[in-house]
Length: 237
Image (cartoon, rainbow, N blue to C red; front, side, top):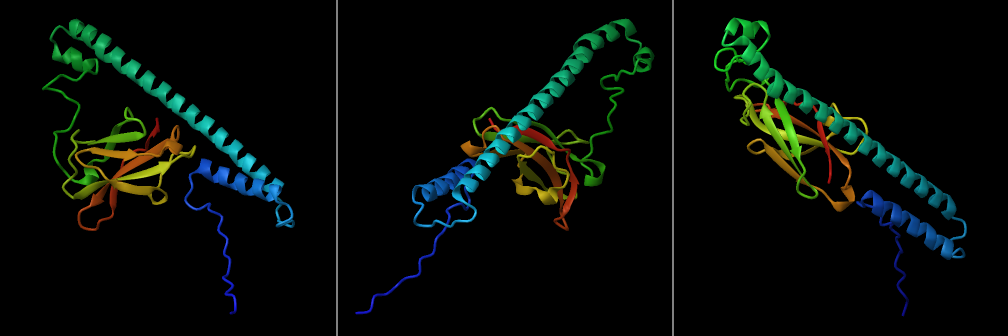
């Protein structure tokens, strides 16, 4: 009986691996080639060259992580200074100015203060069109391990409802990178917000990775993006 010879097709096993597992798999292949030099003696590039490239990639990843953490630290510093100024104005100046004005609205407005119920500094709240407002990411809650929840409001109303001409609020995401994105075409559409919130879960391999978000209103008729938010970011924790 004639023996059937089946074609042997090799696969690397590198598809869909997170970066840490990818590097480990590459090094494993190189080590196996080094351990059995007579099976495939003429590999090009050599196993040592492959290991050198894998080590270089590992170093780049470590440097990127350090830079991402530095960006996060700087962002926290900016937020801390913003909160400090807000607290000084709201908790110190407001009380002192109110005492100094002694109920005189003209003095208060001369000093640049708004007056509750009279001079608010805001346009009347109207659920208008997307052209008159934009979505704002007010914060990213990461108190749950490996989960980020994006909180979003409308710039004009301060509420979570979408404008009249918007069908929904879509969330775009960029995982990692030192440069914040400015084009949603280069980001992943990860879903739509519900009542001003969107939650996203991450793999343990993405721990300490910076995640960028842009949220955008989608036109009710054309289903195309209307107005997008400023970019917001947080590190997976």
